[in-house]
Structures are given as structure tokens and as C-alpha cells.
Length: 125
Image (cartoon, rainbow, N blue to C red; front, top):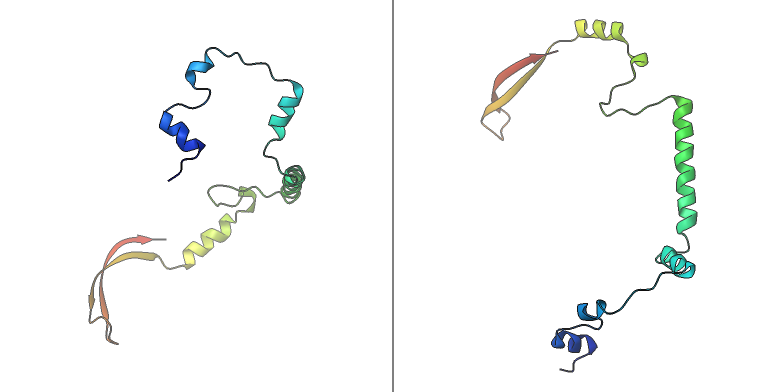
């Protein structure tokens, strides 16, 4: 099988400009053209317009949130100004307490006469 230049380099165990040569060479300072090339390297033709649209979108979302007064929270609770404490108290009086249970056994599974044995853990409201 013929070897290409990479295979030859790997076979020799040493690349061009290896660590031995680095001590002898001094690097030169970058000029403005080199810095500009490094800044624009890898940037496609649509990157700047996309960034502009993204910043405009963030600004509009901020304005909308400021106008409607909505603030997202991690807990999922509404702001205290929107709470209805009296209505919640009335609803708690009318509702039946919830029961938390665990199914321990199923009798006659898969038939119309299936029965479940449960163990009630807690009562919640």
C-alpha cells in the first residue's frame, strides 16, 4: 500500500517544526491585518444579520414583558397581587380531602370482576 505524506511523517515519528525547532525560532508580532483575519475566520455571511435579529428579538421580548407585567418564576406561582386567598379558603371547605394510596395486590386481573387491595397512606387537602 502506498504511503502518503502523513503516513511518512508518522513513520518517522516527528512532524515538521517539532518541539526541537520551536526553541530556535522566535515568533513575530501580529499586525492589524492578521488580527482582522483571525477575528473573521469561521464567520459566515449571515452571522452578523442573525446576531442583529436575535438582539432585536430579546429587546422586544423585554418590552412586552415590561408592558404586561409578567415575571416568570421558578416555582410556578402567580405573583401575590393575583392571589385569591378568600376564594381558596372557600374552595378548601367545599372539597373532599384527597387520599393517597398504594395498590398492594390485584385480584383476578384481566377480567370484568377485577378487584384491587390498597393501602391508604395519607389524607391530603
